[in-house]
Length: 81
Image (tube, rainbow, N blue to C red; front, side, top):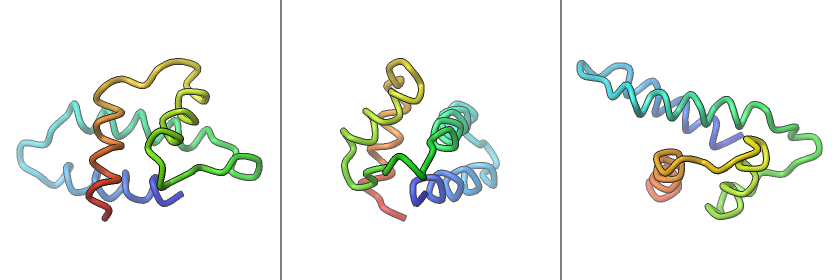
């Protein structure tokens, strides 16, 4: 759930910018949708392992994440809050 919180914080920050990056907002929205599809009662999201997060999200998506989705996840994990 921490990743979902971080995505929302980034989304709000980008929306407040005058020239908001619409592509980044779309990527954030797509990642949020994937995170919300996870049944956290049965699935533990490994928030500190990028590779495992990508694997779980690709299982939920039933396909590969885009390079932008992977890059955003990587940036989020590197920059923390």
